[in-house]
Length: 110
Image (cartoon, rainbow, N blue to C red; front, side):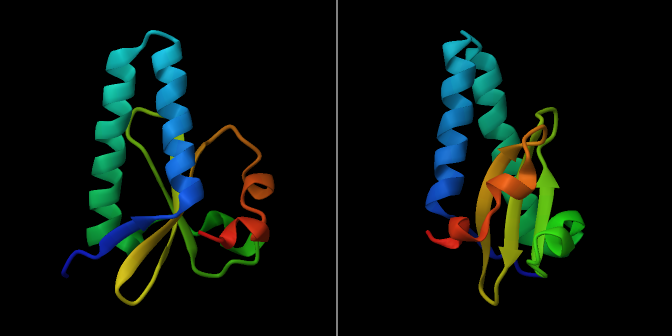
């Protein structure tokens, strides 16, 4: 299968920036770099194998095509929808957050 382009939405990019800012504010430069590496690996994985993400929240949120993939060694989850020509990344959230609250329908805009 050909890899699809991963396109993060504005909120997903903000989530990533917030996570990196947090690690840097804690003087955890290596953790910030590791987070970026783990995110890149997750994006690569979902671009090649989008069907492997969990659909656990799809029914609860009434978003039938929503999937997520966890980052390795980090408590973050990449929420995405597979489109015909690309992977639409909605959010990158810490797994301890109230996921349904953070994934409200008004978050669907870029």
